[in-house]
Each structure stands twice: as C-alpha cells, then as structure tokens.
Amino acid sequence: MEQYEVATLKKGLLILDALQEKAMTLSDVIQTFSFNKSTAFRLLYTLEIMGYVKKIDNSYSLTNKMGPLSTSYNSKVNWLSVPPLHELSREVGETAYVGILYGTDVVTAQVVDGHHSMRAHSEVGDRAPVHLSALGKVILAFLDKTKLEKILKELTLVQNTKNTFEDLHLLKEHLKVIRKQGYAVDDEETEIGLRCIAAPVIFEGNMISAVAIAGPALRLNKKLDKALSKKLIQCSLRISKML
Image (cartoon, rainbow, N blue to C red; front, side, top):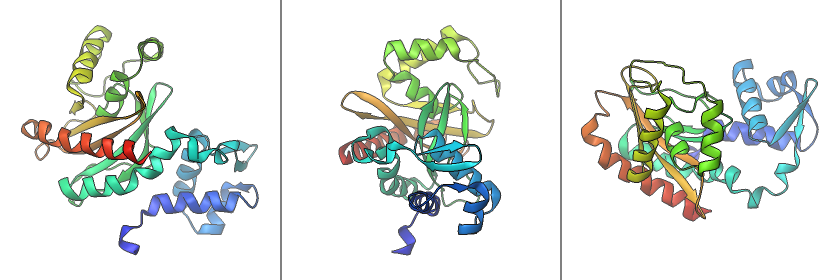
C-alpha cells in the first residue's frame, strides 16, 4: 500500500535498478528520475559510502557488493529496519533513525520523520563526528576494544555545544556507562534544544548499527529516557531477529 512506502528508500532502489543496466552520471540520474540535484547527489553519495556503487570519473556503476547482499548483515539491516522504524516513529511521534559507522563519523542510513511540525530533521547520508550524537556514542560503546581505541586516536573532539564531550577520558568513562545501561542519550550535545536516545543493533555478538529517536528537549525530556530506551531496544532486537 502506498501509505507504507518510504520515499527515500524507493528512490535509492530505483537508482540501483537503473545501474544494473548501465553506468550513469549525476546528470543522467537527475534526468531519468526527475530528482533535484541535491537529492540525486545525496542518494548517490550514500550508496557510494555504503559500498553499493563506485564512482569512476563522473560515472556511477554497481560494485560487487550487490551480489552477496543477502549475506551482508551490515548492509541488510539498513533495508530491514524500515518497517520497525515506521512503527517506532508512529508510536512515539518522533523522528527515528538508523545510523552506521563510517571512519570517525556516524552516517544516517535510514530516517522516518516524526509527525510533529516541530521535530528533528535529517536526511539519508547526513554525517557528523561520532562523539556528538547518541547514535554515534552507542556505536562507540559497543565496539570491540581494538576498534574503539583506533577510532578514538583518530577522532577530533569538536565541541558543538557546552554539553559536548571535549575530554577524551570523560568520554571513555561515559561510554562505559552507556554499555552498562544499554542505551545512549544525546543531552543537547549536538544542538541546544535537541535530545536524542539510541540503542545498538547487535547481531551474533557484533554491533552492526544503531537505532535512535530525536526531538525537541522540551518534549523528549529526561523523565522519558528509560521508557523510550526500552522501545528502542525492542526495535533493535526486532531488526536483529529479522536478520
């Protein structure tokens, strides 16, 4: 049914279908699907960083990743997460996301907008330093020690707000708390007035992505953290079972 369609996901799949026939430039995608330039670029960029397409000169073509798609858990989760994300967003009324780790950044892989006129906004392909958000922090907290240390050595602790972690030792201690409680909170660390809660998606003992909800701090207040974290964990478990 049309009401269950995810517009961004559908656009990305249309591009993948077209690339099975031939390589395409950004202009080709714009003309073929009547996308605006910004949308076309974001979709192609996201497909590229996730390993589905490669760019040679100005042309995009499929990579070999499309072949073993059915066994690639790190990529499958981004498509399988759509129905659970819709249910989560509808239930809590806020914007819901899936994020993945890319270098020292967290990248939005899926997003379902909340129904409030004043809500958190994001698009597939948006990226930010991993320490700034609940999505990023929960991913860091559930990485194995070797990977975590490597990322922390490369990470620059930029400070977006007065609440952003700028001390590496304090960040490490905070990650221990996150791992113990099973979820992370962005308490106006990315932007004043915005709060976010996130939980990891674990499969066979490995952290493969994270789910989150975000909204205005006045509505997504601290009193709701535990209740909402339970809903997020239920959502992440559902995604894991779907794998």
